Image (cartoon, helix red, strand yellow):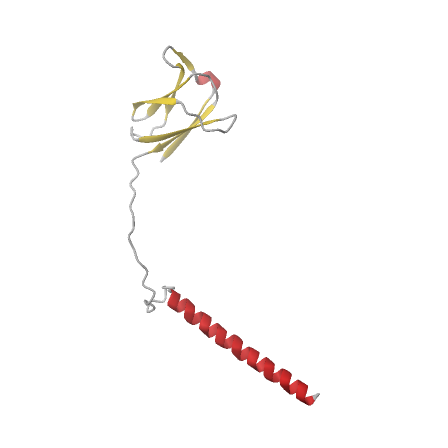
Length: 131
């Protein structure tokens, strides 16, 4: 889950501590979040301070008032790693495309091409003989 919000110039409120502040409501129901802020005009990443207010909102702090795109991503995502190996000798299943099956197909195609080339060579030799 993620949330995107644009802070316009009018959204900023003066703050004695940091200059200006604006509240972003993300409604992700968690304080474990990842925040990325992009300047809407320059499209550059902006390094600003932010404070987590509660499970649904953060406060962005800045020395200047500018239009920003704020992206808040839920940081509670779980990551699962799959540990697997490929058995190239396993060719019994029709859905398995192992390197053995691929090699066998190439050998089959090679034999067909070589057979076709042999027939062409024979035909060319016969034409030369008759001419």
